[in-house]
Structure formats: structure tokens, C-alpha cells
Image (cartoon, rainbow, N blue to C red):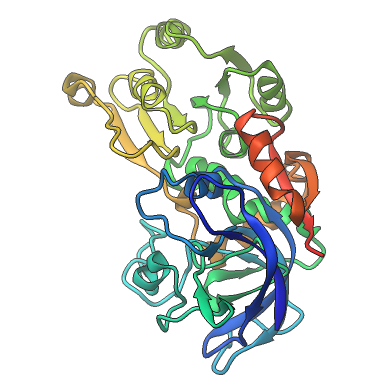
Length: 369
């Protein structure tokens, strides 16, 4: 079938929205009609050429929500008509990692996914007989896409799909970092560095976990205002002396939990230093630039601080994304407020520009025609 899609043809150049071919789903795959797709910084990162694992030509996009139109042979996890969220972090439910509650790092299809192919080592997109590769196993900057069924989370059909899209990456990543990776405890003090979608998700997660004090840090007053809206009790503009301020606010010891959601290694260092002596946990969510390293003074660790990373917030996609969506529908937080702009597929490059200017929280493509 012919579909319109945004194709990365050359690093550092605008995506090209064009008509390409999409083949039928094969064994264990599903054809999804996209209703919404968030424009995430990871898409911009790959398009820029900064990602050392990036490749062209490919259809970008990974923060999608839509409706299953058709399934291939042996597909049993989803059916036509199901409302789904795409998962760049799949959940096969059978591999060693899926069976272990300590991680969400499914290994079932990782190798081929990293190369831009579906599990059988082939692509479903093509143009003039030449393959166009997939991105993060999902490729959601398109009218339709074909996805492995283990990379789809079936969600409540009552949930508006435009607000479901951020659960495919940014929102779940932030919430999960607090709820599943760090496991924030009731009555604790938390500091969240960076208040984009991921950071706001962490603020929400800390609130849902029962944190007593949630300090949000950002360079933007507008984003700090959003953080208060979603549960922050305190806000601070980013500054070099922030660690001293946090220690001063916590009897000199630091916060129980800190979260870094900027990808800036200097901010990561602040998150480590601001964690409480004896038991503080600093969780790294942001993706640093190629070749960058995080310097940690060993004494900070010897005295009890811990540092961990969080991929997709530790969320097991098929199992836990539907639970997060249900909590939204139950009124525990406002996912729709995080969608600050809705655009056409043809406007995706303008969305990248707005992202670099740090405008809004999440732009979502809601029209692909």
C-alpha cells in the first residue's frame, strides 16, 4: 500500500514528507493506522547525525498511538480494532530480561531493531524498489506502519489517542523513572532537573509515589510553572550554586531522590552531588552527547550515594503502559495538558525547530493526510 511518511534522507537536513510503499505485515506483526505521534528529542537527535548508531534512509518517529488495522500470521497479542501505543522498548514476555522484575530491557528483537529492520531482518517500507529502514522498531512519522506485536501496548479505547502518544516514550520514561526505577518512597524529598516532558513525567511519578517535597529545576520559568501544575512543591531556576541550596534545604545532607532529565553531563553531576549522603539515589534519564562522560568523586559513592540509569523509565511496555494510561483516565494526573501543540505531518520540521527553541512541552502530529 502507498503511505505518506517523513523520511530522513540526509543527516542534518529537513525530513522529506513523501509517498512510499508499505508491505503487508508478516508473522507476528501488525499494521497500525497512526492517529497521533509525538515529536521527541530522540527523533531530532537521530536526524541531526549526532547519534553514532543513526542511519539513512529511514522513516523516523517512535512516539505513536493508533488503531490496529490488520495482523500477520501467528499474531495473537493484538487484533484489528485494538487501540495501541507503539513501544520502542518491546516486551516479548519470554526472554530472561522480560521474566526478571528488575529490568524492562527485552532482548528478543534488539539486534535487528538496532539495524533498522523488523525481526526477520527485512524492512516493510520501500521506495522505487529500494528498502527504507525502520526507526526504533516503530517508524511512526507515517500514516500507517508495520510493527512487531510485542512492540505494541493495547490501551483503553476510551483514552484520546493524541494524549496517548506521549506514553510511547517521554511521559512513561519520566513517570517510570520515579515509580519503577528509583521507586520513590512516601514522605521523601525529590529533585527533578529539567522540566520537559520527561522531567514533568518524573514530577508526576514522584507525586503519585507520595513524595512529600518535589523540587523542580529548569532554565525556563514557563516550564517551572508547568512543573507546579503537575505536582512540584518548589521550583528553582538552574544555577551553579544549586547543589548548595538543595543541601541547605535538607539539613546539609541532600535529597533522597534526584532525577536528571536534560542529557547535560554537568547537570548529571549536580544530580549526583545533590543526592543525600547515606542513601540518596541519583537517576540518570537524559541521553548525553557522543563521547561525553560523567565525572563522579568516589567519596560521594563511598558515603552512600547511588547512581543508576533508567531506560524507558524501567516500564515493561505491554504490561505497564496500559496501567499508566488507566491512572490518567482515573484522574490521577493530566496527560492531555502535556500536549501543547498539534500539527500536520507536513509540519514536522517546524516542530523540530520549535523543540530546539524549547517551546511547549510536547508537539503531537494528529493529521497525516
